[in-house]
Image 1: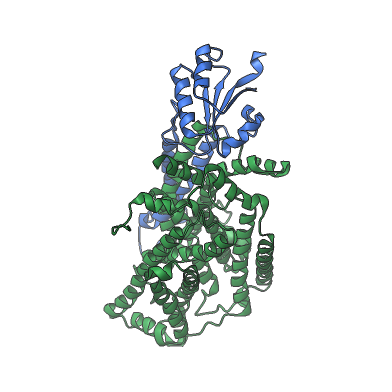
Image 2: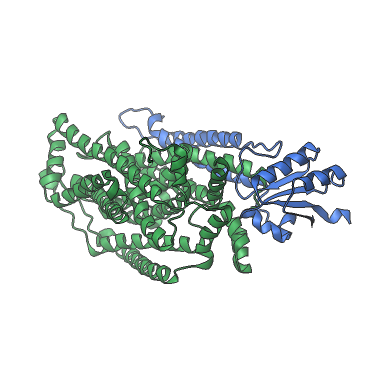
Amino acid sequence: MKTSIYGQLAAFPSEESFRAGLLGLQKAGCVQLEAYTPYPIEPPVLRGATTPMAGIMFFAGAAGAAGGYFLQWYGARDYPLNIGGRPLNSWPAFVPITFEMMVLTAALVGVVALCFLAGLPRLHHPVFADPRFRRASQDRFFICLRADDPLYTHEDVRRALADAHPESIAEVSA
Amino acid sequence: MKPEIDPPRDHLDEALIAPGQTLESVTRTISDIPLKHPYPRFWWTGFLVAFALVMLLLTSIAWLFTRGIGIWGVNVPVAWGFAIVNFVWWIGIGHAGTFISAILLLLHQTWRTSINRFTEAMTLFAVACAGLFPILHLGRPQFFFWLLPYPDSMGLWPQFRSPLEWDVFAVGTYATVSVIFWYVGLLPDLATMRDRAVTRFKARIYGLFSLGWRGDARHWVHYQKLYILLAGLAAPLVVSVHTIVGLDFAIAILPGWHSTIFPPYFVAGAIFSGFSMVLTLIIPLRAIYKLQGLITARHLDLMAKVMMATGWIVIYGYLEEFFNAWRSGDIFERFVDVNRAIGPYAGYFWVLMACNVIAPQFLWSRRLRSNVVVLFVVALMVNVGMWIERFVIVVTSLHRDFLPSSWGMFHATFWDYATLAGSVGLFLALLFLFLRFLPAISMTEMRGFVAKKGTDS
């Protein structure tokens, strides 16, 4: 049955053949592509693979700094200490904690954002069912053409994948 | 024919990894240490010795909680004794990890790749040891949460204008961000461990902690951006933490502490002691676990050079302290420095000079620097020297106050030494557990490094 198929999983022994295979499929017009590599490859190969991480962490850091400063400013007002008439809003003394709160908030939000953006933790995934996939975290590069791609059964696509000479190719069930 | 000029960069990169390493071989070499547990005799001996010291630490802490800080040698005028010395020493050691991971990453120093994971772990465990001491020194440690701003029924706030309160935030943030940075770096490696695990139980545990990482190309894009941004945050953070520790001293008006050189000099001292601790640990470990192919002679050479460079900044700090005391014309400042050199603690001062100023100079010679035994001994001496440096700063400044009537001496007790030894045991025990269960070198980064080298040549 078609609905129970997740996609075609092709394994490549080297980064070059993997890149060529991915390029071929993208040229053939495939959109529902997944790629798995044992280390981050530069430049990113998948089209449209961008990340909003920088923006998220910037705003988190700004919010953390503002919150950190507000905490100290509020504390200084809530329990005023009059030391020789010095201003309560003694900003130079508030700089270190403001900085630390910026770093802390940005880092914490960054990790939560990674989990959110990558859909982790996700302990089960169809590709894990394939025993070959164990090497995706070691020394093999994988391309998965998902079954929901409109060109999934198209002959050109099958040929494009075969032309890249993957080490092996097999269907994985959903 | 040997070229006269320095070899180009690529050749230096070659020296960072033994020839013939492949994606498979680096993965296997690194993951076999936790999975196959080679050299069990070394591991068990080391771990049990460290564990015995942990028991000593727990005994010391139990006795401390029962009797109070009177079991230590601290008293007026030296109210800051071993606890603060140990705190500053440990937190300084913790700085090399973040320096190697974050600052060297931002500077594109590829040689950090094979040592960053280990030094990050070292950072975590050193910060854990450091964090113990201020809490133990509180006297009423059960009220440690009074340091945190929370809506308490007394209507009080922590003193946000005090460097000691900044410390709470700085060390707390540093510990948290170090854990995050280390764990994010570990994620893909935990996935590798899951896929290489031989038993189902291990695969499940590693799989659980890897959060189901599968190396998706889209995930890598988010991941890399997060990692570089965390490095960007950690780099100023590491400077801020020891700056604030330096300010703990510098903001007090005590002669010998009240100096603007303290923050930069403390940061340099932290990196100096951190690198010496990395060398102290890595030299025996790479020999025992036969990792010379991944942690090469060139790595040791580069670390020795960083140690020397930061050592010279520290020496500049020493000179600056003396110069300022003389130039200020302040009799109390002048007295502190004279007292350090020829007073009752002069022995400590001269050992400090021998360890931190004289010993590293042997590393100018390339022949001595490439001798691992010499390098190990020098690193060990710097570790001792940096501990004594903090002792000299804390104790000699406090024991001779402005008024001779309030002068006194500090005598460390058995429990002072037991707590220090116990914290070393805790540090080593955690490191042994780390070596036993987690990959000590980043497999992901090593694979990237091997692949990059393959395409370059």
